[in-house]
Length: 192
Image (cartoon, rainbow, N blue to C red; front, side, top):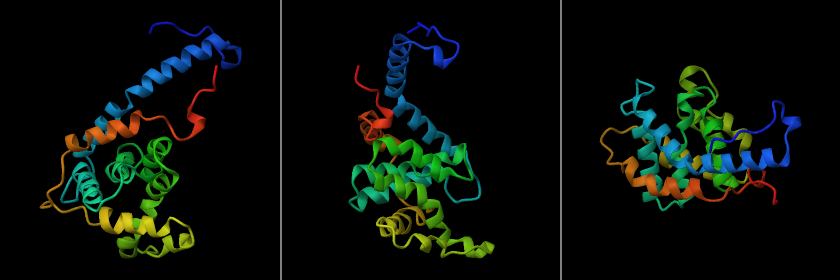
């Protein structure tokens, strides 16, 4: 696709221009699973100091979710919960949630978005922080699910001896999740 829109300013665009861009964006979105998998591979060489790489950590979390009987969306969330570490180390949870949000139910996106705050429970008091800061969300309907996500999958997935599944094992799941129609209609073009 080598065609270009006719405008220099968006306000000057025509219906044909925006139909062309919509087609281009849909084609690009079709390649999202490969880009997500590439993003996961980059986690294999990042953030030193832990006994496992961020990729190994993510694979452990996803494997634990799968073995715990979680559904595909929660397994994908466990796999991708730290994908934002590469580009957004201080708000990686928000970035991971933004990547997942169009493709998973609202509960799963909320869990990923808040997992950083909930993970603080396990360590932030050692650094002078409030480990109970997550309790301000105690009345939220997905609070317990996020506590479980962190307790059963995230905080315990730094074990170099844990036999986690490979990224290739999760590849079909990633492809299924990221090739489905987005849940949020803000990401879908209006009917012609």
